[in-house]
Image 1 (tube, rainbow, N blue to C red):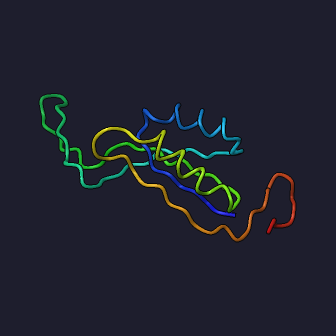
Image 2 (cartoon, one colour):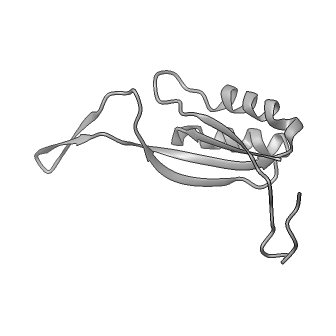
Image 3 (cartoon, rainbow, N blue to C red):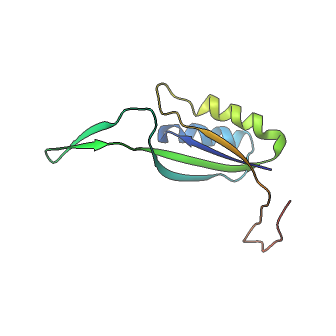
Amino acid sequence: MKRIEAIIKPHALGDVLRALETAACGEVLVSQVQGMGRHREGRAFYRGAVHVIDTFPKLRVELAVEDHRVDEILTLFCRVGRSRGMGNGKVLVGDLDEVAVSAARSSPVQ
């Protein structure tokens, strides 16, 4: 199995989740994260003061898939999670050696 972790912009979440549901990907974990990349820092005015914003809100979408489905899911993220401009994020793929379902108190799945 493989672990896929994608960093996307928050506005893309609905489209990504619908596409993953259509592709029958199973369980998906979504976390709020902050990130910085090649994009320039922003400035915000709050209570009369200028604040530099050097990180931006992102979402991390994680799921485990069978090896033969990795290319399909990568294509899905690149098609659906992409937006115009910088800061589209990254999709990381790694090996997943063991999976255990804690609620079922089962032994690890190979």
